[in-house]
Image (tube, rainbow, N blue to C red; front, side):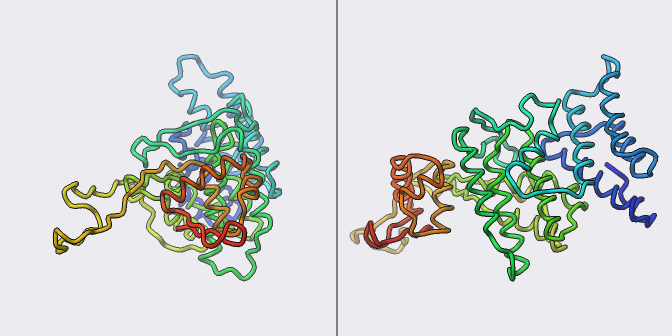
Amino acid sequence: MIDLDNYLKQGEPLQRERGYVWHTAIGLQRTDGLKPSDYLIATANRNINSDITLEQAQSLIDSYYKTRPANVTETTRTEEADKVAVRIAMMLAEKAFSFSLVEYIAIHRRLFEGVYKFAGRIRDYNISRSEWVLNGETVYYASARSIRDTLDYDFSRESEFSYKGLPMAQTAEHIAKFTSGLWQIHAFGEGNTRTTAVFVIEYLRTFGFDVTNDIFAEYAWYFRNALVRANYNDFKSGIHATQEYLNRFFANLMFGEKFVLKNRELLVRAKTEVPQSVPACVPVNVPANVPVSVPVSVPVKITVIHQKILSVLKENPYATTMQMAKIIGVSDKTIKRALGTLKTAGMVERIGSDKTGHWTTK
């Protein structure tokens, strides 16, 4: 990593600014388990010290991988880390941004052009990814056929949201919620976390937050794991999606809070199973001849559609199946089947009649 402490002590504003930019750009490679080369670090230090411009730094990195000997030890992913790091540094050094889906896609294109053939293209296939924090399990990402509609929905909702008068904690929580939803869609084949991180950094700058600091750099791996935990459910094992870790990250990032961020705390652990001989919720002192109603646990695999329905109903409990179908981009029958599953699992309940009633989420 960049020797950031050294640049901070020197007290020159331009060096500090460049140091933070590079520190963030390099640190974000950790979200995909990548490590830039020593050559990239040396090149970054030259830019920080004003020996070369960012454009020259990018040219040096590109030339390095065009002319390097065939027997060098750097892997293809090291090349990816170097090229993407210098591109992130260039983007973070710019003062231009627009909150839009077009911008989000453009960031992916700029970061990964020449690295991935699908740079800047929304994926047209379904994906899964083994996660360390989930003990090898995967988050359910958006299906390929619903990505565009889901992105449009999330961007539209965020554009309409007003942060005016919102307390600091709720501001951080809302930004965390938007970031979590955007990441869960996983619009691209690779590079989603880095693209989302750059987009969110740029977005927060429009609110006056100076977030090109050591939080994203030092806790990039925590950031990814927190996104995973915010989007993973396994009810039969007692594991529920939680945004608390992501909230802590953004509270530290935006408002200088001091929450401890430890990756091992995010590692999922299933609840201890109740022995079959002692049914859950049955008091041990109930006489044997007294009938007892024992709740039945129904294992349910929560999909992207289920998550979107819950999100819509939390915002509008009076939403109809047709409205939900239009928002989420699926058929009316799909919504009805998914609602049936959610009702069976006890996650939603219909209060009142079909015409005038509303939904409650649990």
